Length: 244
Image (cartoon, rainbow, N blue to C red; front, side, top):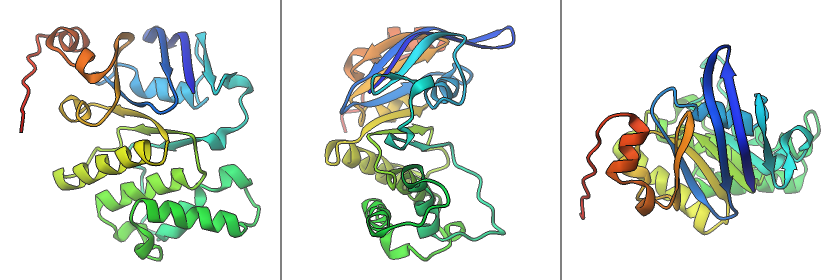
């Protein structure tokens, strides 16, 4: 679904990505981890076509991003989007915004569009709150609303950029259960940027370690060991498994 080939990017003289090659296959739940400033968000912006690599190529569904037009097939959940408290959009209105990538801006929503919006809210457990202002929701509920917005376009690939930031432990567990359900039961391929090494290994199917270059890539069992983590963070790391 996604392939990066020898991607380089820099901001001025500061090299952020250097020779990154990575693939995301259909059905993957891939976590992209690394320290702050390692290039994770930059890589996501390149995948979304918001930045152009200085060197290398990026393909979505077999098409290079410069020629790719079916952007509705890619859902995106950014880091905790800012909410305008002076414009109290309801949950349904926020989720409906995610449908316009498929139907086109300014076009009237049809019955199947409204059905997709309701299904997206139901998937994340927010249908009973469809008329509630988003600003009145808890942090975990707001994040679910943003995921529903991305799901309203019925994407094949869902990209999430550190979506767990600001969630408490209970909301975090429910959040990961939702992502696992979307991946395993609904067949949505997931690419998630995260800094929470200890948690992601329990939920994802594959892990990619990025710190300017791709340090390693594989299953959590293959990747999350002291040697790889020490290379990733540039300091000695000890991994402790908790069987409970």
